[in-house]
Length: 382
Image (tube, rainbow, N blue to C red; front, top):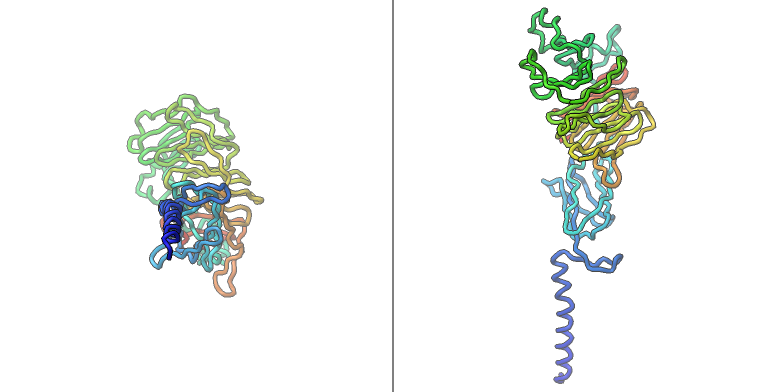
């Protein structure tokens, strides 16, 4: 080989090195070429964790990942900063499909995906249809749960709940508090709305002491009105005749949150609140300065109840339907309607009609009361 030829080959190799080496370095650092924008850009990733473990998780219809034997999560790297579609599949469960954005140098997380079983198993706990003269009042907890206190004629009394069985009759017949419209317990305190429109708080251990007035300006009281306190350990909401109000602890006033609202529920972790009317369900973060109103579901049937399954999923009843929905409002929202006919055993089926629902977060089971039949599901949540 002549000297000139060897020189040409050397120069070509050097040129290739200076061209390819930066590309390899950038590639190893997570950079990719975006052919849509015709530019080199840093990438991001998607982390997905499901319960139960998925069969397959497919990103953009081309990247297929399977969780390991002892894992229920996957991590996909080197994704261009744009919207990506995640499909979660598992035999016997509804598919989960979501389109979410990926940012540069960030990991987008879907770490609370709950897969819903297509044919959820139920068992009958109580069947009153075959018992003459029985009413739903005879059903066991959770549908006949009694609170410690009860309001009669705008006075608060101890109720007939089992926990009050040791109290003397005189104490049960004596008002604990007077002139109240609604109440709620918070830690070791009781909060109530007085007939004067003020919101009060008092220590349960010392109800004879002067209560703390929580607001400076009273709400207008309507004699035939409806009032409810929705609270957790740190937040207080008031449903004032379908107007949802939020206690602003900085100003000691009740700020407007949303209307019309049939009811509202605070998430177990206290970070979010769901609120709904007859046809729409919304979710909002509580910590935000201004109320959000992210719609989760639009129903053609009248929504009768809505409950939290966990911090990321809700279950609700609308007409004759029961549905489960995620509360992650990024992109599309996944929701599934449960079968309206429940197969208990071969030859025994129960149609869902105007159901009452309850979810026990301790055992992870759904309880349904329909046509005087109380059923419980298999475990739904971790």
